[in-house]
Each structure stands twice: as C-alpha cells, then as structure tokens.
Image 1: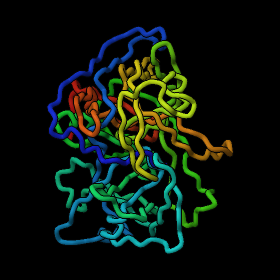
Image 2: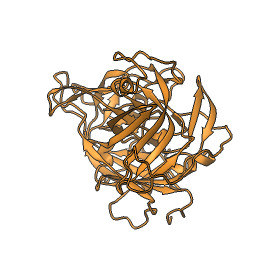
Image 3: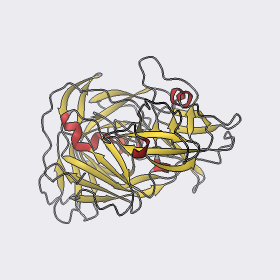
Image 4: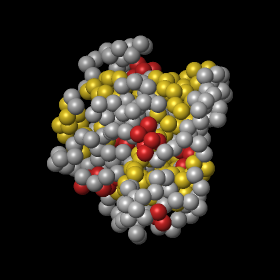
Length: 393
C-alpha cells in the first residue's frame, strides 16, 4: 500500500512563528490518567517529508549502480506508509535497473490502483540525509537483496520523479527523524540505525504501534516474481472530537503523507459528511492529493481535537486539528473482504506545517518535536521535545 506522494514544496520562504503549546490537562472525556500533552497551531500540510540518501547494487561487494568518478547523491522519501520500495521510471533508467519482462504487481493508493513492473534482486544502501559526504560509498549501509516496484510512467509536467524507501528496509530497525530542522527551513532528515544504538535522543513520551498487512499478494492480476513487501505501522484508538460527537479509529502511521485524513465513515460519525462523503458543512480547506493511482481533490475540516493514546496512559492531543476526508480501500486477507482505513496519521503532525489557502500557505506552525524515533523492532514511536539537547553526533 502507498498512500500519498505529493512533494511538499510549500512555505519554504514563509516566516515561521510558534503556535504550539505544551500544557497539562486532566481530561475526563479522554480518559487520561494524569498529564496530557496539548498542541495547537498544527496545520494540514507538512512542509517536508523525511528524506534519506540511497544507492543500489546487484552485489554487496561490487560498485554501486551506476558508478562514476563524481558519484551523484540520490535521495528518496522514507515512507512508513509504503509496504514496498518504489523507484520512479526515471531513476530505474538512470541506475540501469533491469525489470523482469513478465512480472507485474498491482498496488493501491490514494487515487486507486496502479500497476508496477518488478525489478531484479537488488541491495539498497542507505545513508542519513545529514551525512556530511553522501557521495562516499563508505557512508552507506546495504540491506537486501529485495525486489523493488518500478513505476511504468514518467513523472508528469511540473511533477518530481519520486523514489520511496518503504517498510522492507525499515522493519526491525530504528529510524531517527530530525523534525526540528523544518522549523529553520531545513529538510526533514532521516537516518536508519540498528536496534540498541546508544546515540538515540532522549524521549519525552512514546506511542505504541501495531503492524498490519495491507498488501495483497494473491491478487489474480499479479504476475510473479513479486516485489519485496512487509507490514505497516498502525496507531490504535485515535479519538476524534467535533462538538458533541466523538469517534475512535486505528490509523496508518504514514511518514510519506503530507496531509492526514480520516475515512468517510469517521467523518460521518462526526456529522461532517453524509454516508456517501458529501460535505454537510462547508469544508475548511481542499487540497490535491496524489501518489499511487490518480491525482484527486479532497475536502478537509477543522475538528476540535485529535487525541492519540501514549504508552503511559496519557494522550498526545492536537486541538483544532485540520484533517482531510477520503477513503483508502484495501483487501483484508484475514477477513476475506474489502476494508477501508479509518485514517492516515501523516507528517503534518510530526514536522512544521502549513495552513493552506488554495495552493498557497497562509500560516506556518512550528513543531515542538526535535527528534522523532521510530523503533520498528519494539513497535514504538518516541518524541524528543525541542527543549531537550540533541543526540551526540
């Protein structure tokens, strides 16, 4: 599954101001045991998505593909919402990646289904986006081999050719995201580390994750060999509140999503749309979304609260949360039927974010998170606040 891949090139030259507030609350309606963490001024569009450098090899002992004296650094978006690893058609051609002539794989995303070609077995080398010399092959740690999804069409006019490092390269490892850098117009830098790394930043609180299989290998349209795929992280029991209505859902944690959104069912239970998804009130915003499938326009609403339960029993609460409404369908193989995601928890809740007026930002909100740690072995996402000291280099 891949949800949202629209490049977040908004607000790069805007002036930042801090609206986020961390406070204490004993919230009876939320069932908090002690101290909830309350944030305001978080808007609908992330200013960036996590980035990481990558290289490809056929043999871990050989040179990367392609090899030149002035080896160019290539980056991809690090994406927990992707069940596989995705190469743009342009990058596959640049690296001279061979695709199996018969293999086909059908994947689902925000705009529907899309067919992909399947690569030869490859090793993927990763280096942190804040690496001082990304041209040096010694900076990369190689994992694999695995087969990658390759887009069949080139990027459209004024669109960026996007490459995606998804969960097969992340599962069982630790991902460190430098969210605080986006407050200073920096990139949302990512790095993958081994479990037990002693250099991790200190976490103020953690949220448990559960891993769910969203991909469908048994699709009759698939032709093997199929790409390397694995499960995606989900945050359970997210509570939405709008006026006198509440609803809970289990949301996909998708670092590759610029905009977060809830299902039509969730929005209907809040009284925002009818059962078919037509708005019952004027949307507070509307944004184009794209990725796998077609580009679509989705409505969005500002709700009173979005509350995420933490491991300690308190909640991470976003007030005046601005959330899109859209259904993402997938095939639940355990139940043998089609299902719809309750929602997608995207990077706008993690890094600096923009309030959009049309396609332009009108306000920018800084993040209070400096570093975010995804422990994809233990199933936790931890948050380091901007007041804490950064980790040792």
